[in-house]
Image (cartoon, rainbow over all chains, first blue to last red; front, side):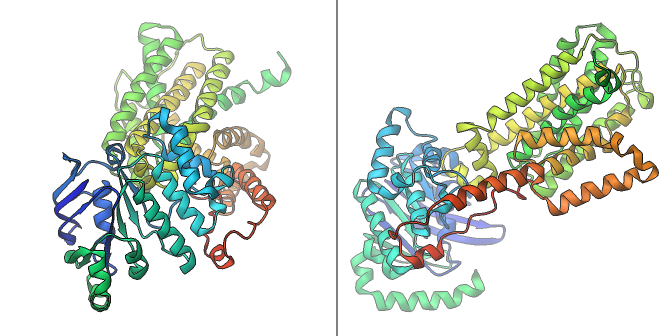
Length: 242
Length: 310
């Protein structure tokens, strides 16, 4: 499991994340909610090693991995699916998946690929087509598949529904649940709070870099009106702080 | 030997040297590293080889090898020094490196021959050495553009963060680009002074940077083919333009400016983009498994990697 304790991170004088603590358990989806500029993406990027933490610790299955560079975090079993999918458009679907297997055990490559193709049959169908020709939802599945190819223990999903139609969003979030059910711990940032709550087990809400709500998803769902009020309030406040 | 070969020997030799010089700039460019250090490595190779052959009389290939190792080490150190720089700042830092090399050549006293340079570098380099080393350079670079390594380099250039997120050490690839560029530039410079038997600071100054950059801008930085194309064009163009008399520099300038403005991916970029459009046109529309509104939201495909690398 992944344990983040009292994490601080920022850009120059601006502190984007202030004393954030949370944990991600295997097989469970932890949803990180908050308005624009609340520090959600910075949290994911810091855990993934793309951004240096100012202080705090990131511990993965008892091993302190704080501040490790991104290419090493993958080897520790933490895989980031960045915002906006970011597939390598001119490459084929299979080539994108192979890139995801960069750190993975060669012997397990064929089996992992088969698992990914079983979870996302469209990727097998389009195997030799250019990734840039996939639809938005298909590209998101490819981004998931690419992350799965590294056989992660923890996946960090940054806005998986961004730019997708509601029907596609539901399908993508159902995929998130499936991936968690295979035993992977998931930390997800999602703007679409209502859709995100449908698949989440645990919810952390942040405003201006600090945790303002933490609890099981049922509690957050029961509190949906409160949560929405908070998100609305934070969104207004966030405009000056972002 | 044919008349053509005899009449154009200097240009033919320059073509192979130019190819290696162009590759020394194309390799880092393709990895997304805006480094012109290849020109400085050319200077290192040219002088180190000339000095080694003059002082010790060692065989040419050994001198080329030693100069190559020196330039690779310098390239690695330079890469470490400018590791945190990107874009324009990196370009400026590497141009400074090139100029430092030429300043060292001018102020090197007896060792470098000062402003007049070194003469009488007698060597056993033949046209077959030139062809062989240029081919070796081309094949080596071409191999890094294919398969697994090629895809990783593409990822490092197109999306460094994503490359890191799949476990690729972007830093290591960038350093490798500096080292390879150092080797290629150095071999080009070594061959130049050994073939011409002379080297002076004017051969490695700012005009060399401009020449190397011109070859890559017009040829295209995405592939070794662009580098070869650019090297051939800009070796043979100046003598062909001689017919324009005093206007030849103007015509040369217009050609370069036109290419830079209207063909940002270079001549090779035109070809690869046409091929990309053809495959895209061939592909059938998806058969209804994705709703139409989702199709409309699909991320648009950037125009190959034209423009990004130039």
